Length: 298
Ligand code: CLF
Ligand code: SF4
Image (cartoon, rainbow, N blue to C red; front, top):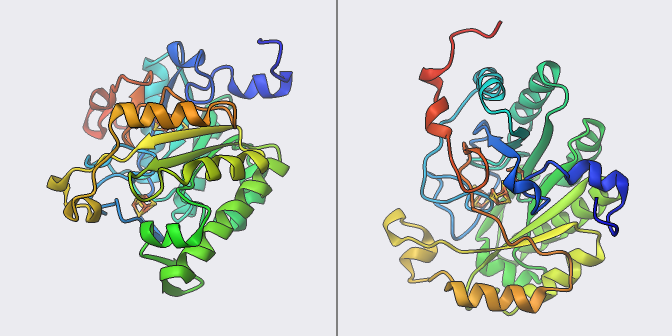
């Protein structure tokens, strides 16, 4: 254990491939795509594909029911000894599909008690679930926060669906950003390790991300992961259609260097699929598609 890391935190990160740079050489994660719906619209998202907040956009993951997901996790755990983390990262929002997310986690915990549970969310309904998340010992939560200024947020999020109503413009961004921050505060107060993902969108939020970094650091975020927008007009994303480009590797690195010294930066993210399996950077998902699993778990 590195001398500057608290023993209780070390227990939570030592075998988590995303939260510990070291661990990603030795430990594997798997995602199950049980969360199809989303409660907001990001301008860089095309709903047909995986949530671009955490995952690689432009791919269609194998959607599973919670029952199918459990079968898959059991089969993978038997075949991949490095498996340490089960994540739910889409293809929509893990918390907008809370019943499915919770059912999957509870059923997997019942058969594999020591697996770590991890989820990724846009944060809109996070304050409503923070107590339950902490109570279920889901120790790792990622919130995608692309702005802390609603005027910038309004250029990224055209609408949210909140409190039974669709809201747009500044109102939508103000509600979303406020709830992301509140969710972050609630989770850190409950001992959950929170990673912040920010999608770097040149000309929209690139100059603003140092401010996001300061805001999330002040609220106890454990890691900050700045990811490049992957825009591909072929997939018909809004930004793609309007000619929005992603950052170059040099632009991304320059921003990451600017942020270093703030909340710890994650630099080894591989922008996984919502059904990825294996060590980061390898994807064994095709070995474990539903049609290849044993019919029943004994
Ligand atoms: Fe999955 Fe995400 Fe949990 Fe990791 S991935 S839900 S925190 S277990 Fe990891 Fe993949 Fe990057 Fe995500 S490399 S996209 S940061
Ligand atoms: Fe798409 Fe994810 Fe944004 Fe929802 S949160 S609109 S799934 S990118």
